[in-house]
Image 1: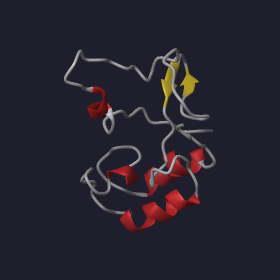
Image 2: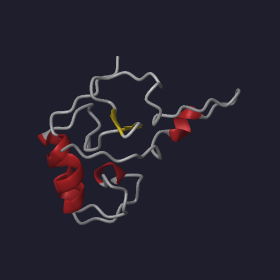
Image 3: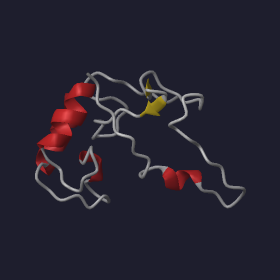
Image 4: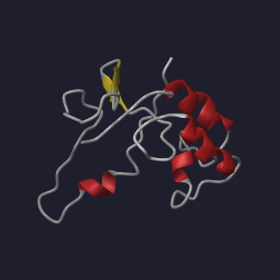
Length: 111
């Protein structure tokens, strides 16, 4: 079973411009996106897979390696936020057990 976490906090700032504001709803399955596993539709809602701690476009054991030294830290979201996969403010085993390991092998390459 793959686990997903609906989180847009880290890239919403990229959507705001000085011109007319554009709203992009990534939960809408009809919104076009790039990537092979970038979203999965569950009960009519598009969800983003979590687990890419090192931000290289895939979920693999390199992400676990990047997560390990951050385990048990409190998240400050400016330096270690990518390791808090469920956004509960703490980097711990819940992040890898429920959000990284179930998504191992997913790839999201953006052209």
